[in-house]
Structure formats: structure tokens, C-alpha cells
Image (cartoon, rainbow, N blue to C red; front, side, top):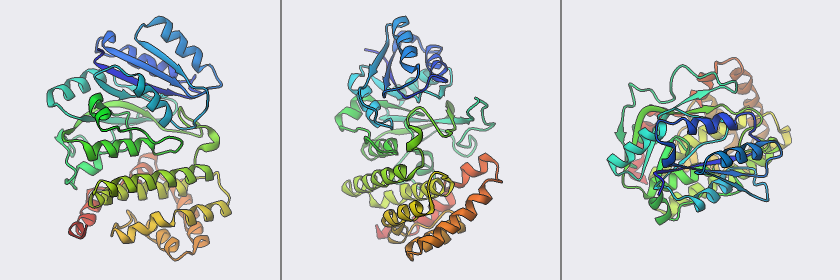
Length: 363
């Protein structure tokens, strides 16, 4: 049995795929201990040729080629998990990179702590590979700790939705029949939150494990037409409904409120920053997602900033045209902000989680 299976969803990634795979090849962990399953989602570039190159060169590299494009990585990751034989599961997007000792550190941590999964810190980089100066999670403020679904100060901030900065015990995932949503974005948020609700032991490591390439108009798991278009928001609306229903079915609405705080802020800025919709399409998206923004009142979850509050109030009043106008103003202001500030605005901080926590007993 391999120690780790690394699953790589691939879609039109020829520019970065080789670098991504090389970051696995050059891990400090012995390569023979790592199984690499590459799942191609009907790429039209030379991605499959690169996959074949590695399959021919390394006995532990496996290529799976699907016969239908699914636009997002959920189906590819599920297919990869079906074939996995490693004791643990890790994931990497085909335009990102592992830190050279990521597999070794994550493996040792999950073994020593007997954890269901481990979360690692990570560093953003731009599309040219220039790495940001600081990791996403402040290493002084957030040192290594055990997460708890009742911890509102740190756990819900550290529990980002991505799967690529984590390692999961495969038998834990299989025992609980946890899979990715298919055909929609936020498929990893559904997976990660499902794991968190079922897990007994989850730990965070402050050491950066991963380099995440900031997405442009195209990336390894989404086609251009899907990226932040009307179609994107229609599908993420379905995904967010599934996440909400999952928390409700498991009796964790109290804790969903913290996940919702992150999702609300993230989604609103995603909508604000989108340039691929007409005003009419924007209005329809807000109408379709009004149920989601109504939860801010139902669950007593405040918006992260005053500008968000103003927009949400207009959505709740069904004054969608004015909400769109407010979004345009905020979008213009955001173009003048440094990228790290824009990124941080989309993530609630511990202070906001304290505000959410004031009403815990009601849920």
C-alpha cells in the first residue's frame, strides 16, 4: 500500500502541469511511497501528452481520461478516489505546487496525531509564479492546534474550503461515504465541511505546505465560459443549497452559521468582481440567490463590512437594480486596492465570529 495517494484533476493545464507534477516528484518523501492519480477532464491541449509522459516514466503515476467534460473538478476527484490505494489522500490542482516537504510533514503529522485529516498553511502566488510574501494564515496568531466544531475563535477561520492544503485518512472518507459534489463549483467546500462534521480529530499545521496560483480567466478545473458567468452563479447557488442542507441534516445549524459567514462574504465579492454578466443577468442571479442572503437575517450573521450590509439590504428589499449599482461602486473601489487587501476583505476575521457567537444559544 502506498503511504499517500495524490489526486490531480486536469483540464487544459499544459502550461503549468509539468511544474505541478515535478513538485510531487521532488518531494522529500520517497517517491515510491506516493501514488499519483491524474484525471483528465477532456482537455483539448497537450495535457494528456504530459500525463502519458509521466505515466510512462513512473510506475506509480496513473492516468485516467474521462470521455465527457464536467467543467469543475468534483467528478475528476471522485474518479481519482475510486482508484486510490494509498492510506491517505492528498489533492493538488494542476497549476499549483507543493512545498518540497509537504507530503512528508503532512504524513508524519496525521500518523502521529491519529487524525482524520490535517490542514496545512499555504501561500498564494500569481500566475507568473511570484509568491506572496506572507502565508495566508498568520503564523504568530495561528500556531498548531486541534480544531473543534465548537471553537469559534480559530477553527472556522482556519477551515478553508479547499482540499489541496489538507491530507485525509482514506478509510475515514470511505467509511463515511464522503464525496465531492459534481457539476457545480464549491464542490470542495461540500467535501471539506462534510469531513469536518464527521471527524473526531482534526489538526492545523502552521507550516506552509502549498503554493496556490491565483486564478485568472482560465484554470485547471474550470472552462472559461463557466468562470464567474451567469452559469457559474446558477451552479454555485445549487452547491450552497446542498452545503446548507447537509449542515441542517446533521443537526449543525449552529455551526453552519460560521461557515455561512465565510460563504456570504466570499460569494458577494465574487459577484461584485465578476465582469462576465449583463445587468439583467446580475439582477436574475440576485433574485435566485435571495434565499441565501435572507439567511443573514434568519441566522443572525452580520456582513463583514458596511458596504456588504448596504448591498444585502437592497437584495432583501428586492431592489435588485440598486443592489447592482452598489456592487459597481464597490467593484470600482476594489480595483485600486492591493491584491492582498482584496483577498483579506473576502474572509471574515475572529472579531466577526465573536459577533456570530452572540446568538449561539438560539440555535
